[in-house]
Length: 559
Image (cartoon, rainbow, N blue to C red; front, side, top):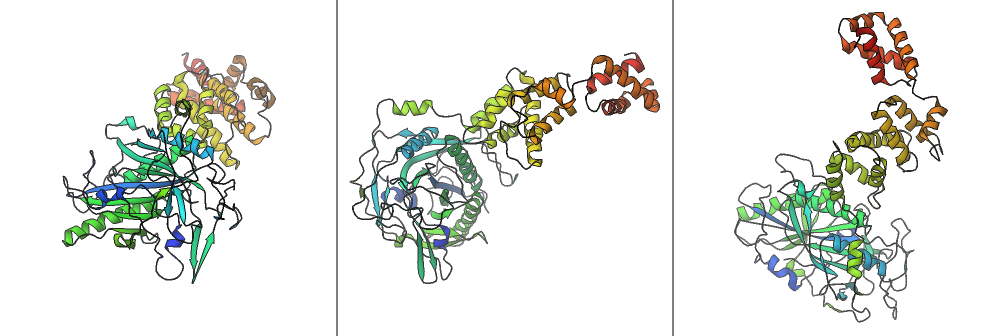
């Protein structure tokens, strides 16, 4: 097991200052990490061999993930939060640790953390408490961080991953929305605990000075600690991607690693099969999935190379990844760890919930993205996972993309699901992309697009006409308001040609294309599409190509 508490909330710039060697942040030493660190733990069930120089080694990976809560304010003060604000402009006196100020817990942060815990299948602690983690550093004005070390909000959960392709057979990563039930090789990663804590300030060393920005100080975080159940860089990456999708669907976080709203510490060790875990290394402050996987892959090879070249013990270190080379370097060793002197925070009472609170929240959990993929692909004929993933990504927070599709499918045969998805993802999104506009369900209403799909697939309208309708609605502001498809077709002069007119158009096409008509008479039906093209041209796209082909064959072959 490894330590469930976080050391510091410094950014990459602090750990790699502009001048000199990397500045070492304080390390931790708590009882929770000793069995894992000393190699007395055992390999988790289902652990598989990692990509390495030898199949004689197995890899053990656990993650500590720090996700910023999407509340719009700080955890213990009313100060707003913003990624783009000027330095030191979003500060409350409590964030700056003015004497006599008291923390006031944001209830929304607790609600979102509880929802996330339930989505991760955790057991909610009926009584969770806050602790002070003491250390002296520039980015912690109070000289302690408020966290939940001993009685966290929730524990004993899991997140099931989709099957991960072997690095030797595929370089692609599994979709974060893939259904875990799609294969017996899906893996369950256990969640040790989820706790609420406050973020620190940002600090940066410039020359001989340390610059501190308190805008981030006091921002609410969820620290999600996994058990060491992952066995490859690919599995770790898949876990983070799936967690990002979960946070966005819950609405508790945006998972934006580029902005520092989700940061990862990875713990890695290797060992021979059926032997205790090896000495672990911790890689701090990874801010992208790519860097996470690169750092893990490097550490695996570094550990194996050490064990295969010497009998000396591997030093237990906290390390950082060099983003340019993909290599890791040491920040500090276990001997440099310090005692954080955890103690209960007397200013914050225990969190205890009214009867029914947890069950009420559980009932409000939205459908997870991978469940949505499995459900829709099971209902609608031909619908593929990537189609549903595109819908999900239109709005990962409220699920408006999926709701739009399901509204569009009301009254339509489920067998038309794939065709409907194509109209939505190819035609609507494609035309919006050409117009430089973002998706909005009001531009082309779900009802209108459903009618277009129904008429096109039912042979009452040509695909060309349907595309023209979509293009008009997108390029004409306000055109969708209160529009009726039949009225819109009349307005645009796109009403399908009547049967009598269609036969007349077919006869004109036959007269004009005599050579092709003769080939069709002799049995070459493929050439009939040239005549259909001429009919479409004469009708300005209003004719139904299927009916036009039937009439042409009837005239020329008596079919």
